[in-house]
Image (cartoon, rainbow, N blue to C red; front, side, top):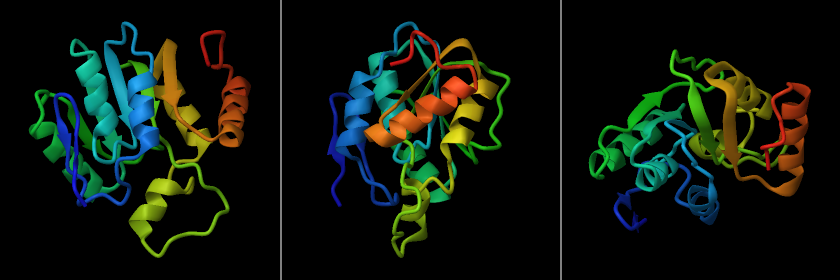
Length: 179
């Protein structure tokens, strides 16, 4: 499958289970980056959101995280070919990721299928189903690597978005600035 050419970078996607999607492009364009200095892209896949954030906020330090080795390799390749080779790509499970750095923004196009029919491709299931990143783990990550003003930018279907908001409210981290 052909890659995507953006304003200042391109995305190769031959090694990832999830390809560039309208959802990811919209989130990357719409997310309010404000004065975020430290940004974490959770479930980076091709590195699309990390690269879009860096393009829009070149002053920021961007780190990207993905559990899947082939996705990390693809993201590293895309980052290396971009104007921002300083984006840090980390392979790891968000449920266990920790950092001494506190992030101002977490951005994610997270998996949201729950109790749904799975594909025969395990990597695709990892990227699409909440088995690998339940919303509770995303909220927990937000609490671990964020600070009092850290924002979470996600794109989800309405029902799953409401579920995420409910979990954030229960955790006491959903405030007036959340949208």
